[in-house]
Length: 189
Image (cartoon, rainbow, N blue to C red; front, side, top):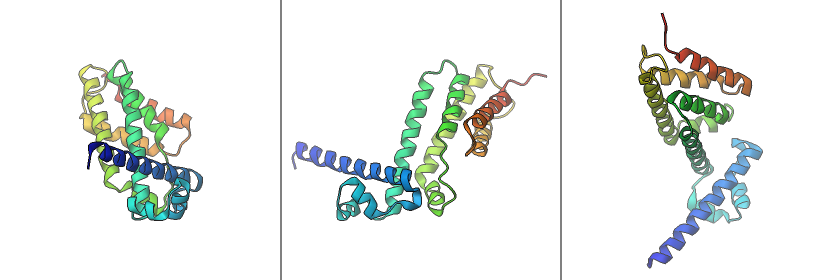
């Protein structure tokens, strides 16, 4: 097949995938994770169910693809937040604040638990942990935070503290960020 034909087909497939995932997003927003159905996604995307099944074999696969896109978007926004920081500590604050703003509880449904056990979530969590560890390493080298604990341990403590704040209001989430940053301050004896 000519390159132009392949590019056109690839572009069409990408547009259909985007329409499907946009429909999943609308359904999740309107009905929650358990309210997503293949027939509803097909109707919302403006495609036939047979076409939908060519892209995703079941609702679980469509939800996983949507969730992966959500995580990729969060990581891109995180990178943008990091680019404007003047110091590693300011970058860390930006990351922690961003994470408090993007934590979305999907409830304790079986579907939500399954989505969070998917490989894409583990990979994204690893990238996030690596970014935080690198910021903590840089902040430690600059003398901005304590160095008596390993940066990877501090990163785990940061993430655990943020997880404990999930579902709290914005004021409490901001207070948790402040407590984390205060706890990271260089130790003085």
